[in-house]
Length: 421
Image (cartoon, rainbow, N blue to C red; front, side, top):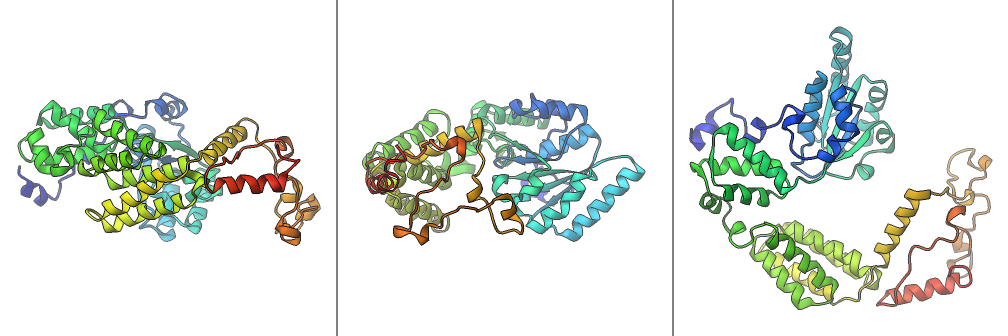
């Protein structure tokens, strides 16, 4: 069968779909999750409503279908970008019929659930709560930012980690065996590295390479061209170069940073990967010592998306040289990690005078009583308690004396002198 006859076959399924596992035994990756409570619940047919959060190709859809197969449930899949409340009403009616006449529960799988608006999410609440449907959502976006709190309270969030190269190689080896492909071991290694944890991409590349007969390094070179010419994403080349790139920016060596940027661009590295590293470095290593760094890095990340190469190299170079040459501070990075650890370990209640007063009856509970509005005071500042009682002496943000942060440090010391030490 050649490429053109494949396209003419109405019953043709892509390799990635044909290789989709139907049981947990064939599922590659996510061992930590499946060895825990979720794996036991699936095996016992007790799966609650879930939201799978993870990068593309990590197995969100596959795992949802396996759950449906294991629990013998009615499986309904919709895409949030294309579905409306009218379609959801029909699905709920079908779920009621399935439960009433066949004693089967319905698993509603919503791909890209972060695209549902508040009204659509609210519509699902009563049906998820009373069990008429078991919701499994899939998203590449952080659900704590994109899904409303009411729905989040009724589901379990499961984060799927990016597949390892070894996981992807297992998936490719299974496909080669089942499809009886002829493949060079080195070619499979290159595909697994290039896919960077995306099983779907790996299987698509495998299928495309198979059209040449044997899946070989030569076939991949023709298929991927410059992207595998010098920058094979295997261990040393990919991760060491990225590490050196970040450390050179952090170490204030613009020449070294530009060298590693050039190496990544020349090797065909994904521009989004490079841009993400720059944005992270701007916040983690420069921070408030030069606040403009994050603005510039974020602008560069957006600009390269619509400019593309070769001009994108200039935009990246500007951001990289600025960040490398900028004064450095990791005070904000240390502050949030310290605060997160504190919140996780002991929490802390919001003081009454800071609580919301916008709803009727709030002051009955003492909300807002004693709050001082800073703009009513000289220099728009007044000393009052903001931290919870149990955290009154906690200090998270410790500004350095680098760059613009020196002025921040001095201002905070002036404002809180004698109180915060």
